[in-house]
Image (cartoon, rainbow, N blue to C red; front, side, top):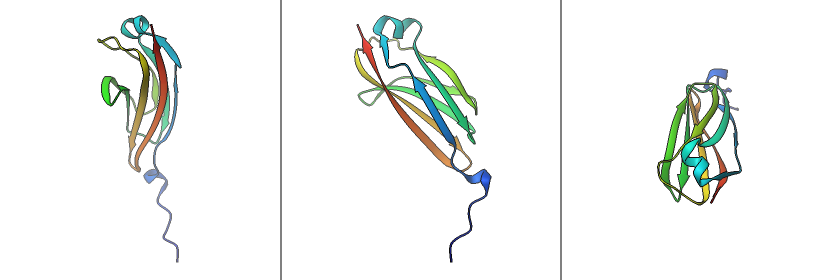
Length: 103
């Protein structure tokens, strides 16, 4: 016998993420890297900017996601990761995108 399907409210959050592919180091410090997220079934959405495992910036969005800009205080160059984590009643959904910081 198969176990019963979980109720609709207990499903993992659905998550979609779009981030700029390239950003200059100056732009990253002033206006930031644009990240757009869309989530359904989430109670909170957190957006993080990582370089080599170190968290450079983080923002918390509402349950539906939205568009935000991640700014850094330190100057970085090279590949960075954008990690978006959506938490909901059914668990956690994570999406990762890569961007490049140029001179």
